[in-house]
Structures are given as C-alpha cells and as structure tokens.
Length: 152
Image 1 (cartoon, rainbow, N blue to C red):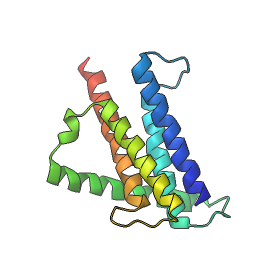
Image 2: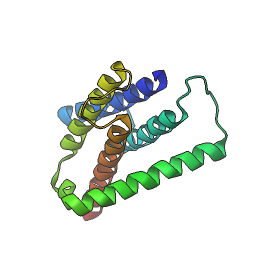
Image 3: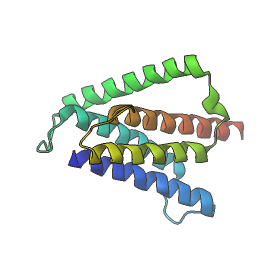
Image 4: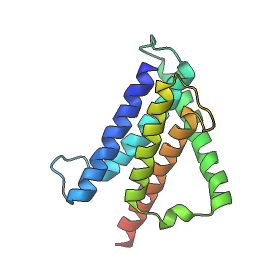
C-alpha cells in the first residue's frame, strides 16, 4: 500500500502544478501542461500495476512483464472510456482543463481516504476505479489540448 500512496502523491503533485500554472498563467519550469497530463496518465497506470502486484517488496520486474501489464491497463482504460462515451456521449468535450484537474484531485483524495481505511469502502468504487477515472481524465485533457493546437 505504501507504493500506492506514493503514486497517489505523485499524481496529486502533478495536478496541483497544472492548477498553479492555470491560476498564475505562467510557468518557470520547462515541463508544460501536456507533459504533466502525460505524467498523470502514466502514474495512474503504475498505480494500477502496483495494485495487481500487491507486494511492497518487489523492486524490479522484467521489462516484458511490465509492458504486458501496462498494455492490459491501457486496453481496459480504453474500453472503459468507450463504454462510458456510449452511455454519457462525449460530454467531456464540453469540459475545461480546470474541470479535469478538479476531478483528478477529488479522485486522489478519495484514493487516499480508501488507503487510510486499509482499502475498505462502504458504497463507493475501489482504488482501481479511481485510477481508471484519473487516466481517462488525463486522456480527455490531452485530446482536447491536441485538438486546440491543430485548430490554431
């Protein structure tokens, strides 16, 4: 669980940095918002992989195993996104970057709350569902940023 907390903290830091850049309108470090959303996406996948491994003692995994786990998580996230798009339509296209950051921060706080309760939830979804939502928020933000860049 300690590694999951660390991953949640990394996502929190990246989301807070995006929020600070949004609020101040400038940044002093070279990594842009796109890089931060990509980092959130990747940390979300790392968090899911760590939940599967469930062993705080594992330091190194074979590259092939990591690649397989990564691809499985991405495939599931994509299917989840497609299923939710079917049910909700593409409502996310009308959302702002700020909303994606707010939702990500809320999901991180929920993950931390679940971890404090030793993984127990009463009604809500588990840690994995929250990581999948975070991954998809990052993907939505990246798609919208890319589309905005191409529009001019």
